[in-house]
Length: 431
Length: 164
Image (cartoon, rainbow over all chains, first blue to last red; front, side, top):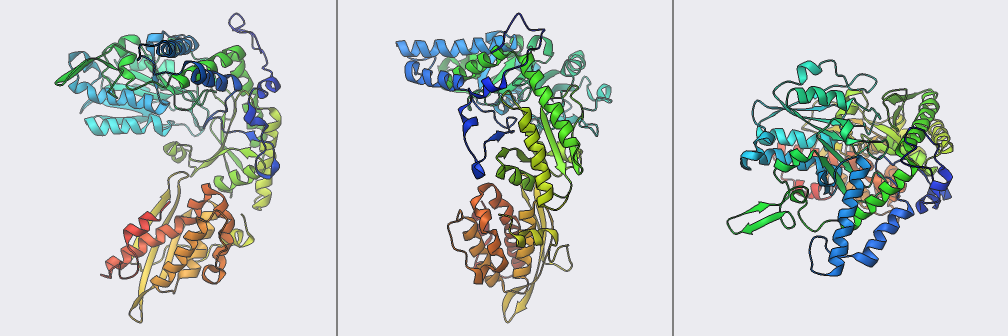
């Protein structure tokens, strides 16, 4: 393991072999007796022993419903859950009171979208979130469906208008019309912080500055950025950041919405019920302050604890080092795949403002068939539109094959991917 | 999984292209990968029973979905709707068998080549895309002609239920 904290400026190569030993699943055999080569971390990451142990330890020693129960285990579970919140806040340079646990990044985006449509009927304080006819919600063609469909639906419910930034042919965000798109009508800008298809890292701070100049809110989709690059919410510029635990070595079933405290204070709830109320009478109810206002139901404490352990694991490696490792793998993959005749890479061909999602199209071979050939070799990739159908359309691709990298991936695995692509071409006779 | 018959149909699909006239046209999409097929059905009368004068299609997708629709069209064009439906039912059973069923080659013909696909749950939808589109289009075509799909042996709801 490498140093953390004081060594933030110096990039230290991570010890991939030591890391791999922490991931039991990487030792298993898959189809054909092949060793697993897992290149689908963009869909979900594998989990290290430390995360599994933290979750198991919660269940075996402290399990109770957090924020309930007048008993010792209830106290311990509450402490563990709140300590996890604080740990995740540290990971993002945020305050614990700005961390809302959700079940996923998708739910985190929906939380804000539904809060905005609930605003019209939620009292004076909430009116700054209200949208209606004449208002605009601005998104981008780069978005995962999770940061697109909730905004389409918000517009449908409220009569607001959806607008969007297009993409350039190399899969970057086209900001040439930013002056025309961001206006006083804009109420919210939803933008990915790292594309799950092209790896593109848009200039969120620049977009946020323009949005804020017109009084618009900004929600960044961090599902692919928080796991893979250092993210400091104070520097990000956005008002909200949504991400999931399972893509960053943590358990399934837990996600996070970070929001500026002053916004969360007046934002109306989305899901209502137990845990989020102040006083309930038959006629009506009042709600707790944030973050509890947004966490109805018994919280997923074990999963939050697991996610905190994932933050420990990543911080021990150092997020700059994680990003550097992935950058090297991405450069290698762009080079190895880009050098194969008949391969078209979707997205930037260099690693400048680009993360480790490498999607590609093979002439004459459908991505499902590429994925099948790779699977027979033990290589797990994603095939399809990766929940970004409009982006594929914009890049004139019906679908693509995608390799994504993480801390446990090696350069040998990138070579195996390129070899597998050559084998697919040979099999289908397109080479 | 990739039998030579499948690769052959993929490279040289039979009955491809959209043709006129037609009684019904449908478009089906596999939402996980975006594969799509546009399919037309033309009916004729065969001794008082509805039969398939033509099945034409335009398909965009993987080798399995493309080959499957090609094999299907080749097998069912000319058959009565009820005979074609029997083939479809046998094919669906094969796809749901997880490689455990001995397919009936007399009924399925070239479609037995897809037996291996049933071992890969993620690919079953690919193999069924064309069949589901055909069933949908046929129900619509029967309705267009005033025939009762139920007396023709099956109905729209049934076709939907079999969708997986």
